Length: 95
Length: 486
Image 1 (tube, rainbow over the protein chains, first blue to last red):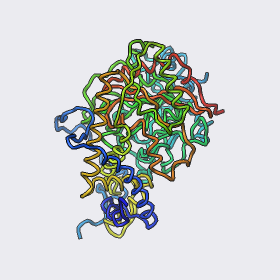
Image 2: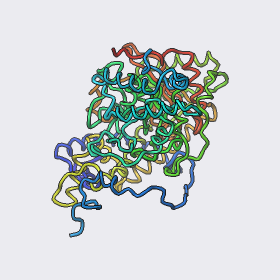
Image 3: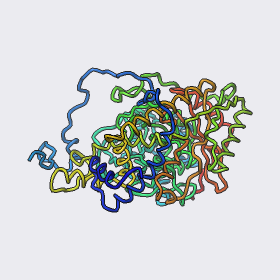
């Protein structure tokens, strides 16, 4: 076993997913199968290999820190699940 | 031929001569959609009213004359991953069901400035995670060549729409093959540009070091025209590259002579569909007869690509998708407190494949596993890129099958995620190495399903890739064959 049900529960907590019992057991099996397949990477010796995060050579891209877009509170708030006046309304964060 | 069957370059000439109008073309497209959409299901959202208004404006610009883009007045479809101002944009996810963006992404803005007509938003795998478009939260898209089969994915709606003449051309995105594989499945041409060639601004993020925007069209000339229109540096995407955009379309001279084509033995493997191997090898022989030099090359780390990809892509996805918390936009479930709201929103808003990948990526990034999975995958990614660097010392382009099989049956691979992941085996390495890749039709299997050939180029060498693809296409009729839909 590469992954246990307890680990699946822990990862779901980190990912903020409330899995059902059935999802937990299915995902344990499926993730285990996928992680077994990934075992093949362990066969490669990568001792002196630098990790590659980005395939194209570009250095930091700087630009002027300038406002280029018009403020448009109404169109942004139009997508809000809940709002009050010009504010996003969210569940209470601080007890 | 009806107007909806034509290409961008055929229509552009006739629009300029004012033999036809953009309104004529747009009406022809919507009539075609009306007649076929029930069987295919390419679109999530159709924009008939705004499209006709855009067509009328294009006709005014055509009437005024002067220099204009070949896209002026051309109906284009957009994968529903592109942010479109005032047009619902779902990414095929329940979590974005009612999202209406307040701005246009860069590729869309460029198309609009060129005067293109936006037909609608096409179906896809949720958050571009999949190879069959079956992971859409909304509907199934069927392959126009055989409605029992998938169109490929994740840009399956765009591919099906182009193949069924429900648009003139389309845009897709490609993170591990999501333009090329559906293009192959649907018998059209699809191009994933070099990473950094097209701005990702306003494209809903899946895996940010791999995602790239590209054209899906009826032939290579149309791909060249669309790429020219959307490519280029954008200050809003710091990974877009300030390299000049070539005149891809005018570079298509039909000549093959002298080009060195690399043939990697790792891409002709046991288990692949025999007709796919035969068709690609026959295409290679034909290119040799037309003046190309064929060179055997090796990409020895190919067998590790799927494992590397499904660590890196899911790790990046788990981070990118953390933004869907139900606070500022999208779906929100009601919980008794903040924590429960988060958990239930994400539980109810995401589909099974998206959850699976978030779980896998979160696991690969979590304490204790980060080095064993994520860093290890990044190191093997470096080896995969080095393979290509070495191969490209000997050849100009690399030729492979796009996919090991033609389009599979709907439901065939949904029960086994790993089998689904393995259908990307020939396209994934290209994304890991940041290279441009193109798929074009090169035959049909015994059941009449299209076969795709992939041509891979060096970084920013899209011009040569398109030129050679076009030269092959000019000597064949595959791309002209259309599915018998009606």
